[in-house]
Image 1 (cartoon, one colour):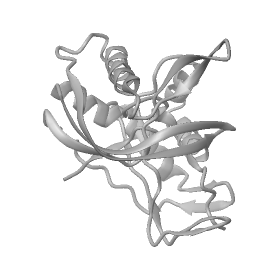
Image 2 (tube, one colour; image 1 turned 180 degrees about the vertical axis):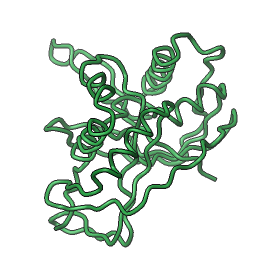
Image 3 (cartoon, one colour; image 1 turned 90 degrees about the vertical axis):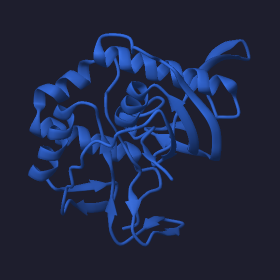
Image 4 (cartoon, one colour; image 1 turned 45 degrees about the vertical axis):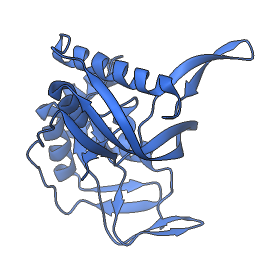
Length: 226
């Protein structure tokens, strides 16, 4: 069966179930925790991808999952090895292999490319009501909130502020707005390739935990680009 275009929620749910199978206490903590979840994952990277009115067709697929917490990685890997078969909607998958890679060292200046879109929002008054407002890079508030979110996540994870919180996107090389439906909610988000400079501790943390919001739903996963 073709894969539904809006599969992120199913993939996020599957990962949580696999984590629960392998590390139930950690999964319970995530369910009951109001703060951040320190992992993210890419869109499915599809081999020989074809589009149809019914969804995505492909030959093989893989995805990338990152986290600053080795316990998360161990839990996801163990859970997927224990139960390698899963479904996203009506499409069935079988995990054939898992490749655990060494952490990439991120320098203070580099080019990032999203492998799942970045989601950033603010709140604005609309017709007399304060509502969530999704942001694109054309809005200056996008960069401010992206930076603040990254610092806030760092502080919660490490229990302290970063020694240097400098972070600046110096150029957006490519941008494409996308709209995703997650559990019935529509989210406007950004596929981007961008030049960034900042403190290495922040950039490396963002590379592992994800940039922007809703990382554990499959937003904000990036790779280093040439």
